[in-house]
Amino acid sequence: MKIHDLFLELASKKRLGILQALGERPMKFTKLSKKFKMTSPEASRQFSRLMEVRLIEKKGDGNYYITYLGKLVLSEIPNLEFISKRSDYFLSHDTSPVPPHLLNQIDALSKGEIIIGVYEALNTTDKLFEDVKEYLWYIADDVPMHYLPRCENKLDEGVEFKAILPEKVASAMLPTLSEKIRKGIEVRVLDEVRMAIDVNDGFAEVALPGLDDKIDYGAVILGRDSRFRAWCNGVFEYYWEKAKPCEV
Image (cartoon, rainbow, N blue to C red; front, side):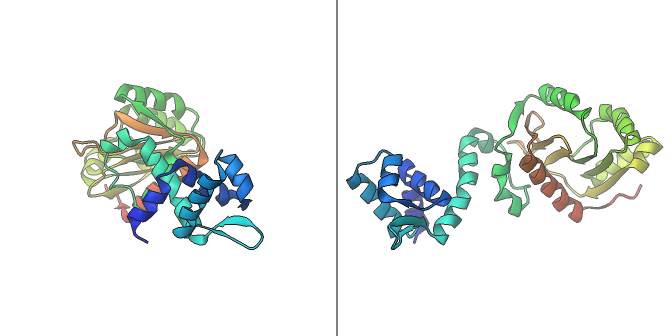
């Protein structure tokens, strides 16, 4: 099967709906036809097309089933749906810094909201920061200095801090910080940082490079659900393994 043949079959809302319905449980012809408000001839055409590309099959019990191939194809749909829904954002933001294995799971960000404007993003983060209780991991090409006194307070509360920064930024900045910050925040460095992640036990934020190839802090994706935060944790851990300890 050619990829254009696959996309052609998925281009129908009804065929996609049938595939998704069978992904939940096997169903008979009559029930599927009624569910999608199709006449018998129309339903037969739609089922035949899906069977021709082997996404579904009919078995001896009279039920239609999704095939293993169909399940695999169906598993990719949420990613495509999210990319399509947020197409305006992805037209102007580069996803290449996202680790490849997590790029295939970018729909984990689907419940997030895009906060437009640097001031709005900082103001939202300020309000949420106070609820951080356990840990905060941070990747960026710079450090918002106004957070440092509050980080000291969070260190006193037992919050774990980790940060990944460009080596030049870390080497220039860290010697100027308080001893509590230098000892309390574990820092690793990379030659270059091309995306920003702020993830903790309450929320997470993602910022990608814009059209100028610089991290766009004026269009931040913020999410609070566990899958969103787990995805951001995965990005951080990927780069943490690649980064080296900062020697200051």
